[in-house]
Length: 329
Length: 154
Picture 1 (cartoon, each protein chain N blue to C red):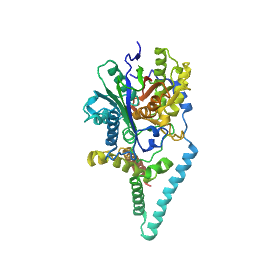
Picture 2: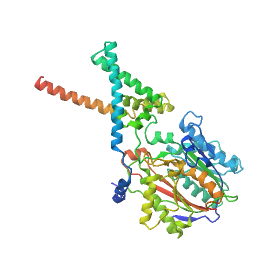
Picture 3: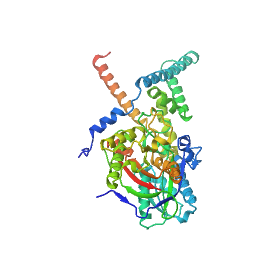
Picture 4: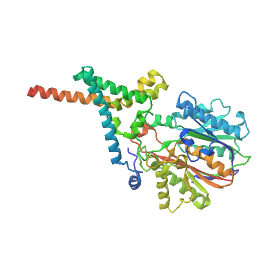
């Protein structure tokens, strides 16, 4: 049994597109983001409509960036955080192509890359777009409290990223290539604090990274960068500790998208989270670095906390899942 | 059947030990002065109404509550109250302005789902438990008072 597999034909990420909200526009990676919004409503009446338009924009932009048009893409694999992944559905509505909805919370982006890569690698399809998005206001309203409610955020909480990214996979072109993927398993250590997502997801990230190195016989030094999705500052510390216990030291190669997205102040919160967090950072900053040959080998590990407000209220703990995909140029 | 055999206590304890703690002195101080300040505003209105409008007793307290509820709702509508709440914590939740905030904020938020199923239905999602337990405990206290009065006749 192996959860890691290698792509024989190495699907290529030939184009990406990214979008981010006003708060992210002030963050560390903002210079690399293609489309920066002035307002988090994007001129729409509701935040949900804004997120739909954001995801639709990145998917369309991504197709255009590759020099293609709508009908040229065979399928879109998309995901987001809302119930029944409505943002993805409505964002792809009107695009004349196949649609596969993916959901593993914040790990959706790498899940879509793994699956999209497999479709391309097996030559079942010629071009697919993988994209995810999240929006602070829609997530807050679904998982937590109304926006205007005056309550304090505990210091271990994270901030859902308003943003998203999409990338186009095919077999011909220039760009980073998918070399292998590790499908995560669900790991649950019994964390019940819904504000502490980093702690809930760190064990699954540890499991996936450890499995990846075991299955591929690689060491952390093989990669220039090991990127986790949205563990935040606290989760990052936990992950490094858990991996050290297993004898793996990733502190030199590791960065966390959640930590990069904002200029964070640890006293207030732990960084960004959300399905759009890893896609935003990868599709903007990381993709740019890879195309400029500044970094060559990257392991992207998106981490997801698989909770719903219902499961939490019924006292369930928060299971985590992390998918990893290796990209090389 | 409980499926919690996976729970890893060592890990949970470790998480607890390195999670950042809430700065209690700071939050208590902030809650104290903001909460006290809100109450002072209420007191100022009370004195004004007493002096210039000749109100007293239940009427007076009802009017002061109304004004404070209006202010809480108004500031929520302006998007200011959540910032006060973020700073003050319990200091702005406990006074009646906090109650107004907890009713108005979901009403604004869920307006997008329509006035019936949105605003009206979701209005009490946050404040509902307060109302339920408030009424239930007031009934309970009333019963105790009634029994006490019946027995001792004081």
